[in-house]
Length: 213
Image 1 (cartoon, rainbow, N blue to C red):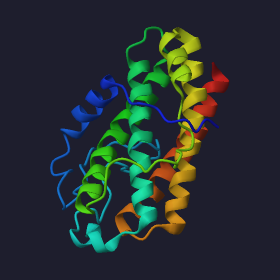
Image 2: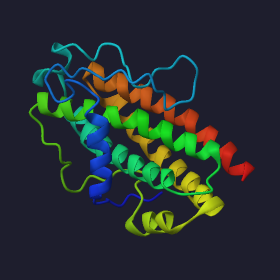
Image 3: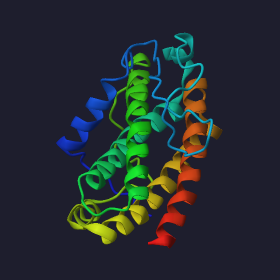
């Protein structure tokens, strides 16, 4: 599993900013989560974009988080941002199976608002949005990985996207499970549980799609 850092491209940042723009109040201390109605899990009834309890100002107070919450949030923001970038790559390609395009759309729709939510948390906690040096992020793709994905077309691109995103999701699940056991902030722990459930379900979905290619 690749743990290298990625300098997020301007395109990815622009995409995230556009998605975050739909989330009112994401950067405020109220940390209200935008209700997208989208689910990255593909599971009926799970609204991954709207998480209960995240409108509580006390839940995100500076005194109500610990270093594990900070590390989880600082790491998951660039992790999600890379997933959005990878999804954007797929959405610009031709001859991609509709099921893979739908998955990329779903990942982008779910993770963009979560980036905005977590950014708001860090602001309300008076924490830096940048992770401290020395802390890796499981499942991140390196520059060469993204260049290969960007250059690939058709079925080859779909297969590579699924392979890379499975590894990427597995890394996010590991990060989320660490937060579940070590985190203090109720909203951050709740989000970590949602991420783990949603992305474990998507991993199974992607494995089935990969086998069918």
